[in-house]
Length: 175
Image 1 (cartoon, one colour):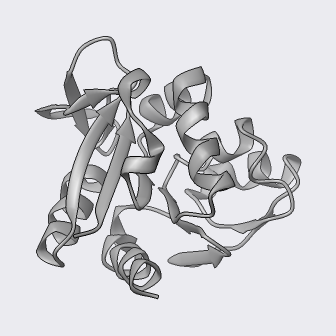
Image 2: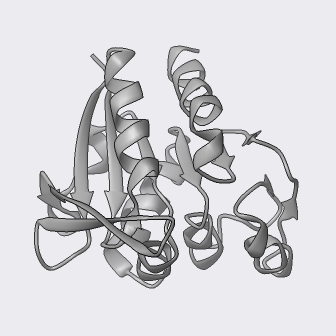
Image 3: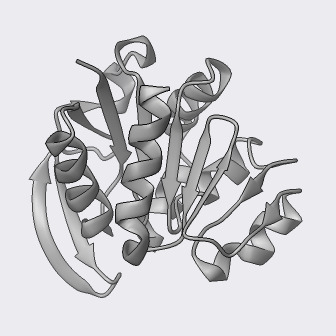
């Protein structure tokens, strides 16, 4: 059974973790929640403004071995994504997946981390509309599509695109 890691901090967009996680489990994948937070209890948000549910991470990013996973998913949420893009442990994991060409999937604001790791440069990506200028300034080409695939990178815009995002992850893992 293929294993998918979710990497998040705190105040993530709940649907981009919970719905994606549930749909991937329904497709037969094993999933693990990894956090860069100081506490394993992590807080979801709904539309960045309403407090959502809390979840318990399986392990801390510093303890995660990228070789144990077949893909990495980065949920969005403005605060979560802002924390991930400045976190050295997040960068270590994201870069390891990128270097090994394993599926690396980022939705909504999560492509910010692809900017800070240098991965975005020269890639065609999508994200939440407000990231267009940031991505273009980082050397990426921005497209407004439900899902954009560039090599092993899968990006998506927002919670409305979750079904297509999950289907793209599933298809890449089965190829």
